[in-house]
Length: 399
Ligand code: FDA
Ligand code: NAD
Image: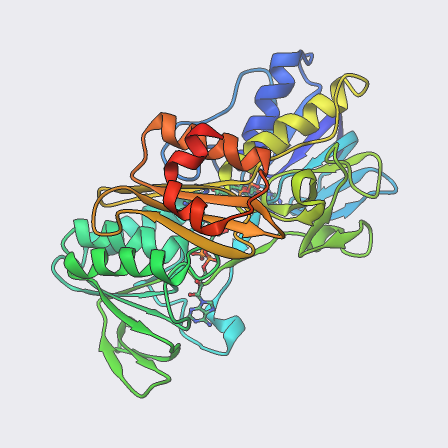
């Protein structure tokens, strides 16, 4: 049993949806393009986990179907249902999976009141667990994006939240200690408790198999009506190991998002691509890069002569409670903070090898965010850090 397509998109997430939109915009004939996704629904915007599906008409959709092996030499994919799908061009948009506590030697995270959050099914489950423990206690494991965003949502839903993570401060991959401290104090003012510098070692389970408490390495035990886990992700590369070149945990691609096999492209969280402005290969885990890398791959496939190298300015953002921040570039080098850390608007610049390479702003206006993006893109030389600190946000707005 088998079907053949010109273009196959493997994966049904954000990057898949944007790639499909770009194909349709540029014109594909009926039946030329197919999306294969393990999820039972069409691609959707993951950040909101809304049901705003991304898909235009005229595309063959093979949903609820996991691809279990790939043969890039023969240009075929084999699904769990036993079907062989062949392609001329493949776009790998398999994203990532949430890391499980079991991978750190802790058992029991399959209990019904323990939640991970990666897809629509996880989100639906998380909401139902949350609704069943009104006024109860949640333990949030991990101090990254999922931990911070879920903790805020749980508090808004009147659940008592304790966050547990191994680092000295939240958002360790991005925030400086000073920035982190602002958010931690804000969270504390909303009732969130922080237990830092330790990890979960085991769960207490009742006779129904539900978690009732978590034990931590520091010896403490926390009562829990529910647990949310956000301890990072792994890119879904396993189908291509030994067949494509991998780097930084992802599929290595060039500036056209093309892998070491010329018929295979990779986009979104699974792609490790050259970030031109840093002259380095990076794998990013954010929606803006998923959208833009997907569009770029399709442009490179359909109009190779007109499409240059992907030239991407990394962009991350989050919104929690009444707060909202944006970050552009790279958080490497020395940090210069600016603005009013006891007020609403503040930020930071990162200076590496004499150049401004990264900018962070909380509470900015649209124009201010555009300003820091533009300034970061220019990578201006910085001679006097004290002067930069004195000028603060004004520096970016006049750069
Ligand atoms: P994504 O994970 O979206 O899609 C991968 C798809 O491939 C899935 O449909 C999966 O089922 C499918 N798949 C994988 N293996 C398969 C196989 N073998 N066979 C068939 N199908 C397979 N970013 C940001 O910048 N701002 C934000 O606010 C947020 N918020 C946010 C909230 C939540 C809850 C999450 C989980 C993530 C975010 N992100 C974010 C991150 C952002 O959503 C992420 O970077 C993109 O979803 C990446 O898009 P991809 O398409 O690469 O992977
Ligand atoms: P993350 O990498 O942001 O954070 C992982 C956190 O896990 C670390 O900060 C650390 O505190 C913790 N940790 C690591 N090992 C641990 C262990 N053994 N025990 C306890 N804690 C441990 O990952 P995440 O928060 O799980 O987010 C998953 C993915 O979703 C990421 O790719 C992220 O970029 C994406 N996401 C992005 C946004 C956004 O951009 N606004 C929002 C939600 C999710």
